[in-house]
Image (cartoon, rainbow, N blue to C red; front, side):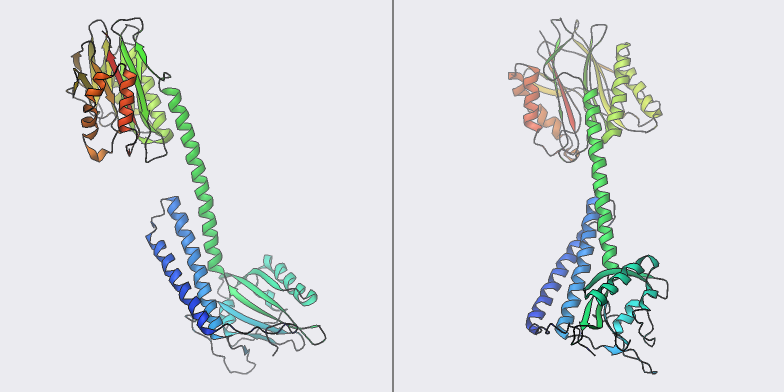
Length: 472
């Protein structure tokens, strides 16, 4: 039988056995490292990034397994090729655990029309070992109809034009299973340069292609989800910017009033999430000369949270302009959330400031109480009764009244300034800023002090702060 090398090219000397063993050891160590990374990747399939990493690890493991098998074959020498028996004799077939179980070889003699298959090729193609090897004319009968032209073209180019074969096609095994086979081969030339036979190595690459498809699908899925996330963030930012007060700097309300509040506010984004939350701050001059102050936030992130925040701010402003007191206003907001299509929970503080009497009337719904700073010290206002908005139907909200003095500073904030696990840490750190607030000339200076204190904090959520200083 002709050697599996073209007649016009001598066979290369095999590499030293020790060098191949060293490569096998390195491959197996690397395979162990990759498998460790794969096992550490989350397996619940909920995170697109973890799905992507796990799919890449699976693909790498398949390729390293293949490399390990090929190196072992190189070390042990070529497999013994057995002629398909014409008599009842049955060639020995390696077990499924054999390192060569996914790589087989074949040779087709064009002069005698004989076909020689290795035992592994029978396994790959799902043929009985006792069955005769198929000729080149019979081989397409195993191939899917749509792949037959590809196989025919490769064989024709090899036999007629002496071109090497390197391509894939799908076969249908007798049990109906479809497998993908990669075929590499070349013609064996006679002494006069004509093609005497064709040899080929066939490899079952079904699992490898499955892994590659999984990687491609997870990559496409990840790209789609990233695009959706980017679009959602852009929409959420635009909606937030459209709803929050347009002023960026100090503001005095009510205007043209000696007792007006010096106002400043700031929004601090989350440091652990790229999505926009549902926190807000607001200040509005009311028709009766009073000033509305409010901060709050809805649970969740993204467009759902910001659209819910926009709904609440719109309703809150409308009811405040109509003269609704803070306690009653909170009850109506709770009813609004209770009847929305997408239920949500929210916390809020709502205040009405009467400049003529310097009186603050306020209510809260499961939210941190305003902090009052006076004379270099600060404390939280005793909160009236109030549960989270949307938590229970028919909730009643209390209302408190606090007299203010010239120079008093009122600080309203949402609960995302520091991680929730820190409890009252945000309030304690804010109260420690009392001396700096006392030295500050404007509300804007006070906000700047808060940002300096909390701007670099690892926040789990976004946060808002609103500061109002009573004029003299």
